[in-house]
Amino acid sequence: MVSAMKEYYRQGQQQAVLEFAALVMGNMIADWKAKGVSHNDALQQTLKYFSSEEYEEYITDIFEDLWYE
Image 1: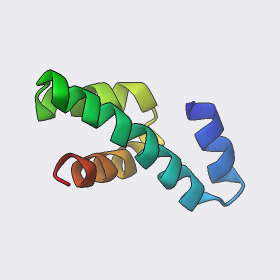
Image 2: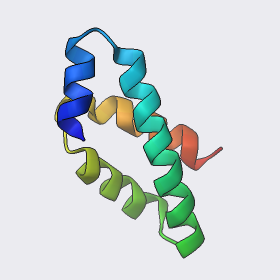
Image 3: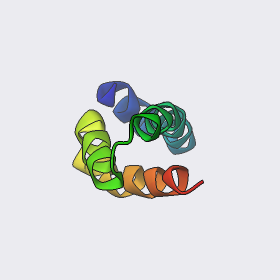
């Protein structure tokens, strides 16, 4: 997944990367909340899932927006 995100990013499609990440994270967050996973544990799992320092700030921002939605 990260390689696809990087390719989109390289092609100048940053918005596509963010939209894709938000879609995937929205599903993950809904599932984790239903299971009672804590915010911190869910964030750490999300960062592992995307596993790219290049995107860590963006992923964290999107995660926070979705978590508190």
